[in-house]
Length: 147
Image (cartoon, rainbow, N blue to C red):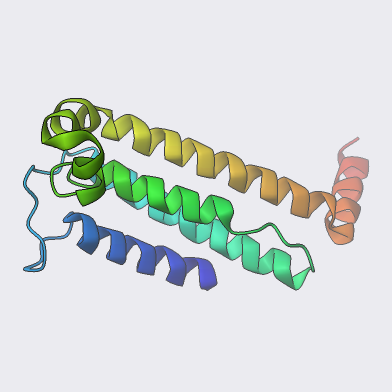
C-alpha cells in the first residue's frame, strides 16, 4: 500500500510542478513531448516500488537508505520539466543552453533514471530474497520437485 500511495503522490506532485498536468498554477513555455508521459509514469511506478520495498525491508530490520529514491525522483522531475520554466537550469546555463542542449537530452535523462531505479530495485529485491530463510526453503523445495 505504501508503494501505491507513494507512486500516486509522486506522480501527482511531479505532474503539477513540471506542468505535465495542466493547472492554472503553472503554464509550460515549451510543450511536453509525447515521450514525457511514459517516462513520468514509469518513474512514478519505480519510485513507488522502491518505497514499498524499503518499507518491507525495514520490517525485516534491513535498512537500504532512501538516497536512490530521492535521486531518482529529482532526476525524473528534471527529465519531464520544461527547461525554460526551470529556474535552476536557466540560472545555471541560461535560456539558450537550456533550450538547445538540455531540452533534447531530457528523454535520455528520463530513460537513464528509469534504468538506474530499476537496477536499484532489482538489487534490493535480490538482497531481500538472499536474506529470506522462507524464500531459500521454497527455492530448494522447487528445485527438488523439478530435478
